Image (cartoon, rainbow, N blue to C red):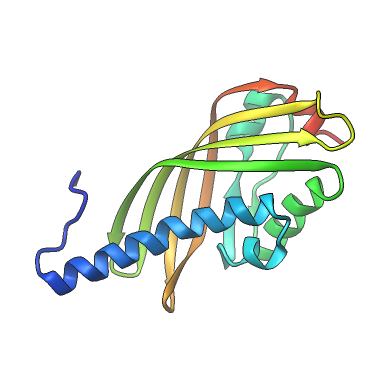
Length: 163
């Protein structure tokens, strides 16, 4: 269960390593797509019927959030919230992957820095734990569900995530 690689034969090891790299890449596309404000890159991280649950973090930072369902809803909601007013940087660390043929589980720690463009003194750094379910989509992996839970934060998240 806690092995880095479960495969035994050389071919199976190569396949598993490729899958693991592609799985973590889905989370990189999620973060970098936001940071670059690249709709296509951001959307490429998600399955069509994906779910994103930001509610555990929202409660901790004092805002309201609904479960986001569907790639277009997720992309429109998140990019729309930040468009023209917030710059972000996401740093992904400590990824752990479990692969089961065409599904996978990923956990990671993500630092999400948010800065108001009009007033850089208004910022929020969120240290979050991500629990991500993924599915195989051809040669790549996409996020089917994501839960973001906050460990700690600094700054003024209400200024970033508020109206």
